[in-house]
Amino acid sequence: MGEVSGPPAVQRPAVYLRGLVKRYQEVEAVRGIDLDVAPGETFGFLGPNGAGKSTTIKILCTLVAATSGTARVAGFDVATERDAVRQHIGLVFQEPTLDTYLTGEQNLRFHGELYGVDRSSAAARREEVLRMVGLWERRGDPVETYSGGMRRRLEIARGLLHSPRVLFLDEPTIGLDPQTRASIWDYLHELHRGEQITVFVTTHYMDEAENCDRIAIMNEGRIVALDTPGSLKAAVGHDRVQITTADDHAAIEALRDRFGLDAAVREGTVTMAVADGASFVPQLFAGLGTAIRSVTVTRPSLDDVFLAHTGSTIRDAEQPRGMANPVVAAMARGR
Picture (cartoon, rainbow, N blue to C red):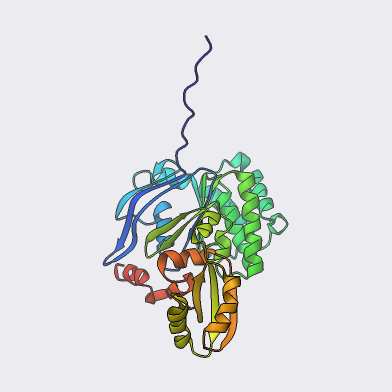
């Protein structure tokens, strides 16, 4: 008889979280997260500033200790196997960390020595990753002569140099113009196909989250929704109608009394969800009783998903940076 094969091996998650909590004195930045990210997946954390995204990334990268819960990356526990975790991850920080007086290649050389990249193959690997991000021809130029987009690409190349199994990108395109942001994502798609690694990215840009296989929407330290971008939008099921009027308060009352709709001012416009926005607009003009200055109808977006789960848009939920952010303030007090 031939050999009987057993069941297929089950792959361990590239990222595994159970009951993850992080407190800074009285502020609970992360409030009990459970999550599995599959090997090879491009996974996104979407949410406003202050939602707990960066704190979670720092825990996963062993930069911050969790208050409670379990976190494993590439099969290693972030609390008890920190060195192993660090050997298997790449990290692109939200804030720039390059030595700008050095050349692009020198930045990679020092990173390779820090991570113990085999010297016999280090030069070939530097060339490989620099070509991946389109910087090979600029390898000998000081980083201070690079544009913002080029510096971000160099940081991504540096994160890939030691062939990590998971690449963490914390707000990788923040501060860049839309065209450069789009080009960074083009490079990330190419890198993902070429390197076959897990990519874990945080962002508060809706269009960037569309690039991910799955996303977790975070708000106030919790995951409030988790699925593919398409499935999350399909679950909303309503169009968004936004109007500007001569009297927003009167318009909101009329929408409630005459149309039975809950509306509110979001991002400076009276916003409501309706099943078929195109057919509703003529009724709106005929029956609102308040002058309408403009009207916009959009199909469900990830912002609508965020609105459906939290009661606000992601822009309205944004917290100011710096000491006005309660998590930042609590961290500062604890120093």
